[in-house]
Every structure is written in C-alpha cells, then in structure tokens.
Length: 296
View 1 (tube, one colour):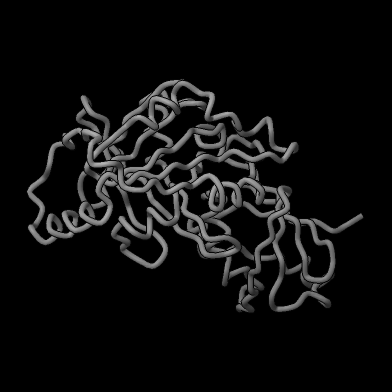
View 2: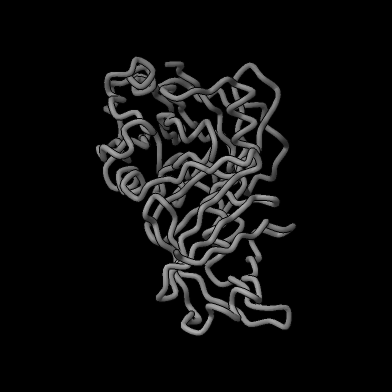
C-alpha cells in the first residue's frame, strides 16, 4: 500500500504546506528537490521543496497549484506518495467534500477551440450604444486608456465555453451550446465596447466556482496589477451592487485565464446564475464589466 499523509491548510494557503517530519524521515530518502503533484483529473504540477528549520515545505510552484484549485484555509488535503518524487493530491473543501477538478481536456478545449475571436462586424450592422454602469470620477488617464481599448476592440467579441468531447466528462460539461437558446440570444449581442460571451458550465456555478475566461481577451483588455492577476468589477444593469472577482492568468501547463475569489461565487448566488446560461461580459470601464445574463 502506498504511503499517505494529510494536512489542513493554514492561514496563508499560497505560502505552501509542510510535509510531516515523520513522513520525510521514513520515505524521504528518494524524494528529490522537485516533486510532481498529480490530481485525480490527470493534471500534474511541478513544485520545489524548501528545507527549513521547522521541516520540509512545498513552496515554489505551490502558489499556482493552490490558486488553480481554489485551495483555501481549512481545506483538507490528502497526499499519496507513488514513488519517484510523485504525489497524488486529493482536495476536500470546507464542506468536507472532494472538489471537482478541471480536466486537462476541458482546459485545452476552452483555450484552443472554444475561444473564437469575431472579426469586426459589418458597417451596416447597427450597434447599440454602451449604456455602462454608473461611472465613478476616475482620472482621465484611465478613461483615455479605455478609449484606446475600445478603438482596438470596437465591435469585437469573444466566445468561451467549457465543453469537451471527452466521454469521461460529459456529465460535467454542456457540449451542445449551439443548440441552447441562451447562447443563440447572446450571440446576437452587439456593442461598441469590447465584450466576451461566457457559456456557463456546471463547474462555474458549483463546488469549485472556477469559470474559464478567454486568455487573449484578458491579456488585451484588462489592466493587471501584477503579472498574474487583476481585480475586476462585475455589475448587472438595474442593480446598484457590484461584485469584485479576481482574474488569474496561467502560463503552465497551458495558457489560460480563470475567475477566482468569493466575488464570483457571490455574483452567481445573488443573480441565480445556473449551468446553461450565457453571460455577456461587456467592458464598460477599466477592469469593470456590465454582465448581461441570458437564462437557459
């Protein structure tokens, strides 16, 4: 039987977790400085070990792993050592339930096939004026920057869907988005602002709450506070509330972007978003979206 250990995530999930001293004393002889973490979906991540006075800790590369799977304080992680410096990691959330792991097949489908950049709409197509949300008194520099983005992406839209043809994941994805009335209505949306259509998959609105977001759209139109993430504001016309989510970009193992944080989960719950809905993310200010929801 393969050896196991478990850990409960502490106050700073992004700073790594320690491997028990007793485990390293018994099995650490053939564990290299760089280990491989695998999850049940088949994805694997390289993480480096750091030797500290208090013991061995998973550190470099751990932050990306933790952010990708939305690992938070008090999550319960079970590690199984398979030899050759490889661990399989099973992740349990705050409900003591194993999370749904985004599959690699789903990731590739989202980034390579499902994200389609639409060309500029024909000039004879009448576009609606962007109504936007209530604008704040932000500085003119940001407004000028947004105007430049509008010129570059005028009447441009992108479509994102989490579907995959892999039979192992048919129950976790909706593959026939083209037949969904919600998606057909969303495709008819027009605006002078840059926008993206996100077709809602089950994993976007339950358990992990980790919707994919088009990588190229994020890189081209969002203002990142760091190389890896930025905060975005989500609003719905007719409601005064706004929700703050984090857009995180990943370059390994596949270039992609995802929405993270409690803000997206609260947005889903407060607006009754469900699988099969289509949401248009219209960029109305710097890092601020107006969301148009087309129910399934």
